Image (cartoon, helix red, strand yellow):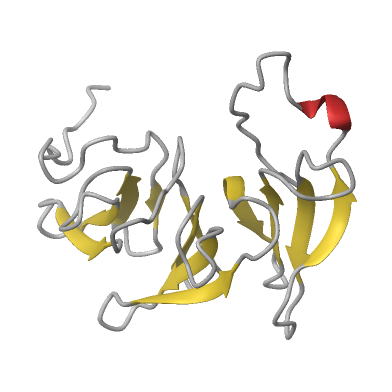
Length: 178
């Protein structure tokens, strides 16, 4: 089989595009870029299945940092959720979601602990959200957190081990999976 080109991304709109894409039930493709959008602070783009023309659907505010590999996760309704490493009400990162109506962003939660989120979040079949922070926890090296349905604050499930960073304290990438 020969691959089919769905769309060409414009380098000025989507610089630093994440290699991770999500596809909703209609076939629309969503992705993120670290430096694109109106404020050069990152953007979410969509490639609609009907037009195959990429479009920026959300530009993040200045001083928002999406992190090294920003990714989106779809909830059960097909709405994209994601995280930022910095930004939000406390400048410590946030979990955001996009609603299908009008492609508007709402902040699901602004972190005040840790230093933003590490890697993508996971949403289980019950709608609970799980993820990792870059700092915080017992050892100061991050923690696994959960937002259970109906709760407005995260629950710390576990602290990451003290040896989680290498000797040069290089940035880490992490994933949570079930």
